[in-house]
Image (cartoon, rainbow, N blue to C red; front, side):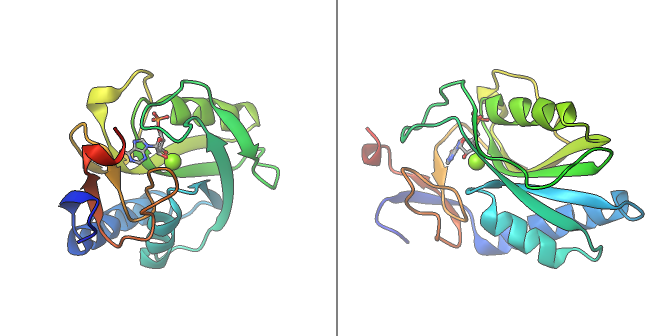
Length: 178
Ligand code: IMP
Ligand code: MG
């Protein structure tokens, strides 16, 4: 285990079974659609890659980069689009892929942003959900795992751009960010 990790919250096996379950649900719901999966970079990268591989349907992908965090562990509430979607989404069915919902600020914003661009439907899949910290209501269709209020890293999730490459998800030692 990495020296900055206090404990492993979700190991590789559990991640794999969560991803398989979500892939089957999305496959079933999107079977006859011509749709677009939109990953929120960078945190969702490993989750999205594994999800895509686990799915049977074919679909198109795109990415957005948004930022609401500085290098801290608290949401600022303001969301900026740093890299926009690279195609017209008018009339398209969209599934946003996110690593984690915390305050809800990011996904609340993205949901409205993509609807305003003319998407036919916008749904959300998140690997992790921290409902205790929700500030803005977000309609999440698919949730991998509900987790307690702790700052987690690994499997794409970072603290100050570190720990994304860990293959498991761990709780960061508080002394690392305090
Ligand atoms: P929200 O806008 O507060 O819901 O935060 C969403 C974003 O904050 C996520 O996409 C993550 O990038 C980041 N985030 C929230 N909680 C954590 C965490 O525990 N570890 C790492 N990143 C987090
Ligand atoms: Mg994120």
